[in-house]
Structures are given as C-alpha cells and as structure tokens.
Length: 137
Image (cartoon, rainbow, N blue to C red; front, side, top):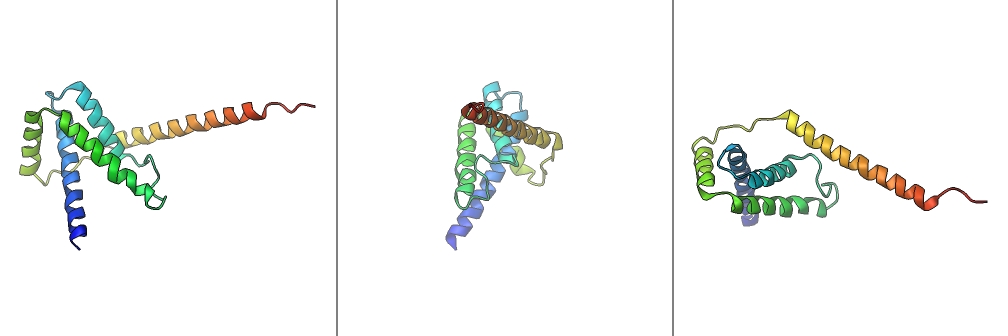
C-alpha cells in the first residue's frame, strides 16, 4: 500500500513540475537551448504517440516511467535557479490555474509523428523494392 501512495505522490510531483516547465518556457530569462529542451520534454509528455507504444505489456509503460522523468530532471538542472523559483512560487500560490488545451500544438505534434511514420514507411518500401529488384529470366 505504501508503494501505491508513493507512486501517486511521485505522479503529482511530475505533474506539478510539468506545469512549472510551461511557465519557465514563457519566461524571457530562460535561455534558448533550455527552451528547446523544454519544448522537447513537454512535446514528448503530451504527445499521443510514444516511443514504445503503451499496448505492449510492461515495456510500453517503461518509456513513460523512465524517459519523461529523465527529460524533466535534465531540463530542471539547466534552468536558472531564479527562473525556476519564480515559476514554482507562481504555480504553488495559484494551484487552480488550469492547463490550456492548445489543440494547434497537439495537432502539430501528431502531424509530425505521422510524417515521420510516413517517411519510415516510404523508406521501407524503397528498401524492399531494392532487395527484390526486377524479375530476371
């Protein structure tokens, strides 16, 4: 039972950190390379497509349990302390702030994944045709 409680607390902390990252991203004091890493982190977090699909037993959820926390931890380490503290105070003082559902960003991320899959499919078809080659008599 204690493990479940710890997991719930850990998930709440990750959610809080991702909300803080959204505010840090908007802050003009945040360096560009950190903003790019925040964009990648939040993009992966909110992406409907995972690196390893969730329907694969056990392994499907491992990417969410390993990759997301690692990306968040790496990003937090690169953020200037004053920027992180200011955003943290804002999020903790107004916990009722709801996340904006930006459908344009979600659509863009989905289209990007679909383009990558289409490119891989095209590459696979091209590779398959080059192996078979024309039938020789």
